Length: 370
Image (cartoon, rainbow, N blue to C red):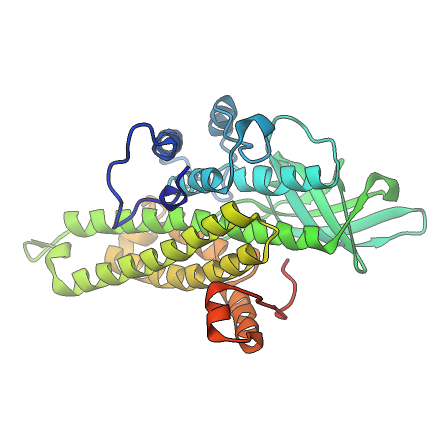
């Protein structure tokens, strides 16, 4: 798969791709599945959102739900980026990133026996040890906990433990977009958990931030497409909104922000493909992408709602499905401010401006992610 085509789309789409290009075939399949799901749920969205069981079964039938953690599929970051981007463009209500990139990977790293089918998610928690050799803890903002198998990463002092949760206490909640973000309380025997290194926690958070960057690109392009269509169709003073110079300037500013985000997101895909998620190069690329996309999202959200007017905030209009996801995803696995601070620390510690530009020998001291 061509890394440069993993996030193709938007204003500067590369155009038709050769029929034998696997990127185009995968993107077309994901778009069909996502569009079918979106169309079937028009007028039926709720807050909190409801797990799309039909879409999940179709993803399982096409072997897309665990692309990077199924040995015989031989898929990598470029393929899963295409999948996450495509589903996000249709506001799909399934935990693909949580299942494949996070829970399945974490379970494999710690030797857990995971279910072969069904959605999964990860709960990152601070925990304590009780006197009767039990570990108890609480994880907040866990995606899709009520409908998924939960793999926990619990921190006790400076040691991390993983395990499968059995009958946890789940308190429902949701983010701004209505996606389930639950509170999970658990108690389990210490011998049911396995110790892992700090590097596992760091890579898990990096994978989560990387996934949100890919999803944000899908939501950015969806927001732009809706805004462009609205300004072409909406008439004022006998002219389409898109004919007014001020509106054209706003659309150009939106396109510029999105393409800036696509550039850094593509860099993150390339780094993960070439060096793996555990590498310093990918850490740097994800930090840059999360910073740039978080800032781009704020500008795109503002412009999109300004050009839509009052209709853009109604429950009947699809714009909110994407702008609220953008706002929520930009805060997951470290806000744009957090990642910008990490870049600031790296800039101060860099031996030269060129080393910082290419991400060589970058050192961070901006705190741990949750």
